Length: 425
Image (cartoon, rainbow, N blue to C red; front, side, top):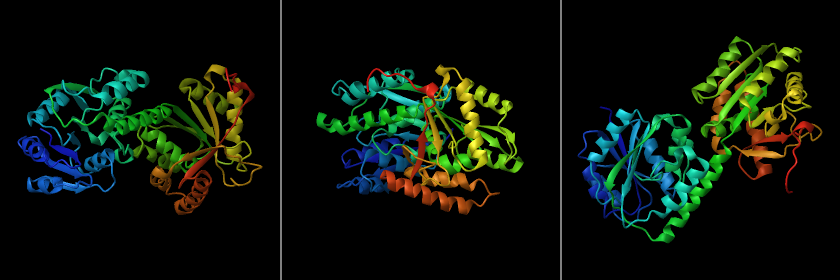
C-alpha cells in the first residue's frame, strides 16, 4: 500500500475544516494532511493545527496558488486533493480512489457526484462545453473540475502549471496529453457550501482564459539548428514553454561530436519527451549537400510541424547560414500542404543590426528563464557562464522592447510558396 498526502486549500473554512480533517485522519492510507491557508481572517489555521494537520500559508491570493503550494509541499507522489467545505466527507473515499487507481492502472482518478441543490454552473456551462469543443477525448469526464481527486504528482511539473482556478483542469489535460490513463468514480451524494451565482464569474473567466492559451500550445515545433547548444541559447525559453504544455518538440542538430551529443541529450532529464536528431556534420564545413537536404526533407514530411525554427538567412556564422540554405531547399521542394504554418528565424549575436535581424515576434519567457539557464548549464564543455550572461542581457533587452522581464525574439519569414489567400483582411 502506497502512502498518500492530503492537500486541502482553505479560505475562511472554520465551520467545516475540523470535520474534514478528523474524518480523513481515520484512513490508514494517508501519511499527512496539509491545509493551505489562503489568507483566512477566521480560525481556519488555528483549528487545523489543533487537529494535527500540517498548516502552511499562501500569501498569494487565489485557489490555484494555494493548491499548487500544497501539492509542492506534499512529500508523497500520490496526492489526494479535497475542498475544505465538504459537509459529508467520508474517509472511505480515499481507499475507493486508491483501489480504483491500482486496479485501473490510472494516474488520475476524478470523482463525480450528485447534488440536486447545486446546478454546477461552471462545470455544466463552461468546463464541459470547452472540453467537448477543444479536447473531445475528455468530453466523457463527468465533472472535470471536481474538487476531489487522486493523482500522481511526479508525472507533472507542478511548479510551472496554472496559478488560477484552472489548475485542476490543467492537471486533467496534462495527464491526458502525456498519454496516462484517467479513471472516474462516483461518490454518490456530496454536499458543500453553495455560493451565490455571481461568485462563479471569475472562475469561469479563468477557465476560459486557460483553455484558450492551452490550445495555442497544441502544436508541434521543429528546430533545425547548427550546434548542440543553439536550441538552448536562442530558443530555450520557447522550448521550455511548449514542453511544459506537452507539445511535440523535435530538435535537429546539424553539427556535433561525441561530447556535445552527450550534452545535448541532457535536455531529456528535464523534458524527456523531446526528440533529438543528429546529422553528424563537422563544424565549419560545407554541409550544404543533397544528403542533408533529403534528410531534413524526410523529417519535415514525417512530422509535419506547425512551427519551424532555424537560423537567420543573413546570419554571419557560416554554420548558421548553411542551416537556412538547407531549409530553403527543403521548403521549395516540399508539398504545399506539408509546409509549416509558421517559419521563424531565431535570434543571433547582432540582433540590433537591423540590416540582419528584424524581429516581429516576441515570446515572453519570464516564467521559464530559470529553466533556460539550467538547459545552458548542460553544456559543460563550453563557457556556460559567458553564454548565460550574454543571454540574460539579450533576453532582458527583448523583454524591455516587449514590456516583459525576459523575452526571446524571432523574425517570421515568408517563402513565396507559403503565401496563402485569405477570405478577409
